[in-house]
Amino acid sequence: MALACGPADAVALAREAERAGFDSVWTTEFSWRSATVPMAAIATVTDRVTIGSAIAYALGRSPAVLAAEARDIDELSDGRLILGLGSAQPARIRDWLGIEPTDVTGRVAEVVEAVQALWHIGPEPVQYRGRHYRVTVGATAGAYPSRSPRLPVLLAAVNRQMVHVAGAVADGLIAHPIVDGSALSELMRPQLEAAAASAGRQQPPMVAAMLIAVVNDDEVAARRDAAAQIAFYAQHPAYAPLMRHYGFEHAAAAIRAAAADDWGAATSAVTDEMVDRLAVAGPAHLVRGRVAERLRARDCETLILHTPSMLMSDPAARASGDPGRTYREHAGRLIDAFNPHPV
Image (cartoon, rainbow, N blue to C red; front, side, top):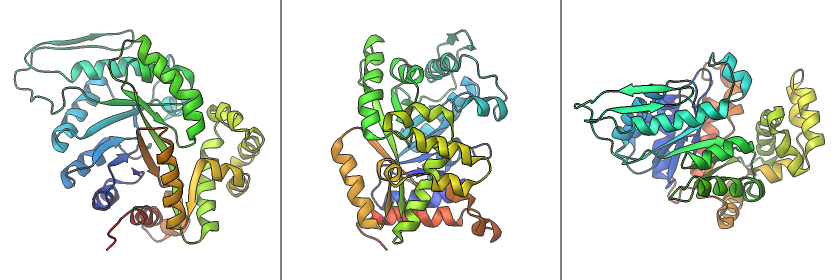
């Protein structure tokens, strides 16, 4: 279950998700929200679920700060942490993070390597030397030992270069919400596994897939909300190769043309075929059935259900002074749909 909301809502929803039997909860990051702070808060109020980030920005923190945050969350959660990192699009790297987006894959690879080195801070000195990052930490006798012998790190990736990095230096891949099972199996997993094999990795790479999911008895409204999230992604040229793979290039072009001036038209340009392929939306029984089909396909090790983050922009909720209300309601319905013992 992905939680694209603030820390207070994330804590409440994570509790509900754990009670409902979900195996993992995942936070995300925006220009105005941290992924790591909600993870720490969730760790203190849950006992069983794996806690992951899908994603935190790899380039927004120094490796030393990122490793320190991860060590703290690992301690709070007693070893339930998966650190999911992503690079963000070039404009966001420059505008949000204040970093020039040059050699992004090289930078992200070095962040992963440096964080893994810093995971073992303790009685022995730690040193990492890369092209972009150089870190030296002397012997730190007072450092507490990490709960996990190795920090699991996954990388969000769409293009071939980042998929290679995910296989070569990380523990696997977080697939974007508009990567369906066929794209994952046909395009990404072969690249991921080849990179891991070439790097001599001992464990097969893990794949966590994200799936846009909307539960609403009003199926038309549910599909409209799913379409808005698909449009949000499809408007970006970075995902044009995926749109071509699906045969959606004409619809994607219409979405891009409309997105700047008329968001309603951009959402309307999302076809029924796109919603059927890239999301599950409708009454609870329909969503459960479609999710069960995806799980039976076994195209990933972890399936993360993603309530559309576009719901955070609901004008009525913002006007009420509670901008998270609509998202919270939708996330709650998604959790309830899978709760075998609803309250």
